[in-house]
Image (cartoon, rainbow, N blue to C red; front, side, top):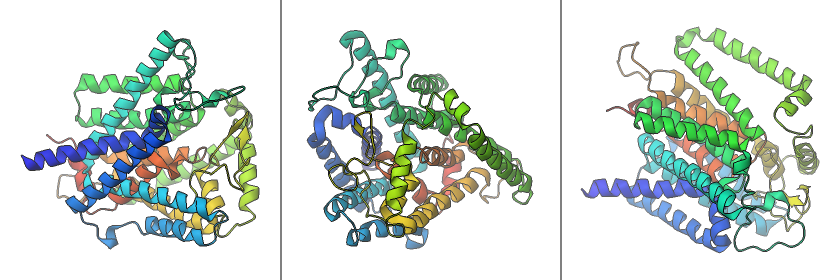
Length: 437
C-alpha cells in the first residue's frame, strides 16, 4: 500500500508540474507574480525532493551530452554577458526549469508520463472553455489580468480574454494567448489520440477529448499552430510508411522526404504571399520579419559567443529595451528559437542546441519506426505509443520556427523530457508496453 500511495503522490505532483509549465500565464494572471513565484518554489522543491528520495539513477553514459553542454554554455555565458545581473536571473530560472524536467523524465515511466500529461491537458482545455463561456455569457466584455493596472489605450494582447467565444473566436483561454492555447490543443490532440489508439482510456471518453482538442484548434485559429499540425501529420505518415519497410529498404522513403522538403521550401518561397493569405497572416508574418531583422542585426555584433543567456528577454535592460515593439506591445522573444539562441549564445550555442534537438529527433524517429529486439514475431503490432516522442518533438520543432517557447517553461520541459527518456536504457521496450492490459 505505501508504494501505491507513493506512486499516486508522484503522479499528482507531476500533473501539477505539467499544468503549471503549460499554463504558467494562468497562475500569473490569477495570483500575480508573487503567487506564481510561490507555486514555482513548491514545484522546484518538490522536484528536488522526489529526485533525491526516489533515487531514479542516472548514468552519465545515458545522459544527453548536448543537454549538459547547453546548460554549461548558458551558465558560463555569465562571464561575458552584456547584462550579468539579468543573466544570473535567467540562468537560475533555466536551471529551475531543467530540474523540474529531470524529475518528470527520471521519476515517471512512459505510462505515467502519458497519463499525467493527459490529465493536465484536459484540465487546461476544459477550464479554458468554461472560462471563455463565463466571460462571453456572464461578463459580456473583455477581461484583463488581476493585480495589474493599465492606463490609456490597452493593446489587445494585454487582455486575458477578449470574450469572443460566441463570435466563434479567436479565444485565448486561461493561458491568455490564442497561439499558446492552440499549441496546447495540438499537444492534447497528439496525446489524446495516442491514448485512444492505445486503449489506455475508455473509447467514448477518448473520442470526446479528441473532439474538444479539435474544437480548441479551430477556436484559436493560430497560423503557427496550423503549420505545426501539418508538420505532425507529415511526420506521422512517414513514420507509418517506415514501419512497413525493413531498415535496409528505407532509401526510397528518405529520398521522397528529401524531395518533398525541397519542394516545400521552394513552394513557400515562391508562393509566400498566397500561403500567408490562406493562413490569415500579413506578408510580414504579423511583424515577425521586423523582429527577426532586428535580432539578426544585434546577433551579428556578437556572432560567436552571443550577448549572454537570459531566456525570456528583460525589457528593462539594453539591448532588449525597445528591440521588438509592435502596436504598443513589447515582445520578450525573437519569435524564432534558433535566432534567440544565436542572439544569446552565438554560433557555438546554435551548434549545441542543434545537436540537442537533432539527436533527440534521431532517437525519437527510430523509436517510432524500429521494433525492439524482443524475440517477438515480426508481424507483431507496434505500440502506437512509440509514436508519441516523435510527434511531440516535431510539434515543438515546428513551433520553434515562429516562437521561442521551446527554450522556456513547457517547451523546455518537454524537450528535456524527450531528450532524456529517449536515451534511457529500455526506452523502446517501455514504450511498447504502454497500454498493455
